[in-house]
Length: 119
Length: 114
Image (cartoon, rainbow over all chains, first blue to last red; front, side, top):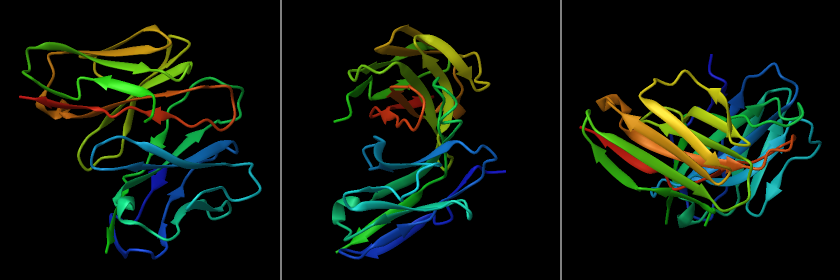
């Protein structure tokens, strides 16, 4: 079973509109972190925002916010007032065992959503 | 600018060649990672190094051999690769201390195996 599911392979959005990118996850670990990354055509993965499973409030970072619904196991990314430069691939990722006392661990990624902002 | 650099940015190699990918992080982090990104597939974790020791190897074929000589440098040695190994190889680093820790990625090496 997929641990991270992104159901929107592609999206077209008008400039200045708000965008919601969907992400659902699957884990039995109570301790985890959820991350969103942006990948422009250049290939570099750019960290945008994260949410810890024990965080009480939804994370926000500038125009980015994370709509975290723990019971539904969803962590949707909301981009307000979209810009042409937001066109890119967006990946949701998870790391389990976040609070288990340190130690490096990799991220599990979804397949991504290709967002295109139209003028 | 992420503070993680990768060289080369593009590499074309034959199946009998031996080459190495290099990653360097300038962020003072203590953990480094190799990921593989193939077309139409999610990023796949290949190797994790924490404090210069390998802590995870996700069943990667032995034709990929990592090396972490110090906390700032990470290599991926390649030999007798297959065409299906063509992909974008991404390096990442993080400062692991428990809790929510983001990883910072380099620009990647686009590898083509002919």
